[in-house]
Image (cartoon, rainbow, N blue to C red):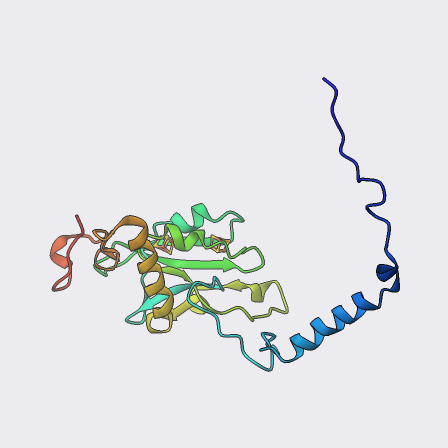
Length: 201
Ligand code: SF4
Ligand code: SF4
């Protein structure tokens, strides 16, 4: 079957006398620039002006600290799912109600791609993406964030934790009580639950 190729009609690309002047197009461009001069500006003079980011922003991954300790129960899911193998951890037993804790927890920030998968799979809301985005390292060793450098108090991470809970509740429906079910997956016995805590059905 013959394919009909459409070409420009004769004379379509021929410039008129008015087009050949170019001046109308130049004045049109200048007029656009002039209009923009008096419109609100969105450019932030970083780093003099700090950039305020919403809770949906994925900055440096951090470990949530609660009562001075990590929430993490050393299940290893985050390390397993991390695409560039940026997380290294070692679990150990603890006398706390939870069974295990990470005796070593490190993130190699030269590898991290800020994908947020570690946060997504964590059953304890123990690792979250913080709003921190401007940090530098001068050596490779400095880029290895140890547990002590990763721990951030829960209060500082509240906006992200609230945003995560809202997102998950939307995702799983109203009956999914994410906050209530949080941090009890590895509890040794129900008798160790604090007053008012329950295991979501
Ligand atoms: S944000 Fe992605 S790359 Fe970075 S530690 Fe988490 S899973 Fe790994
Ligand atoms: S997935 Fe969460 S609880 Fe499990 S090891 Fe990672 S940070 Fe800890």
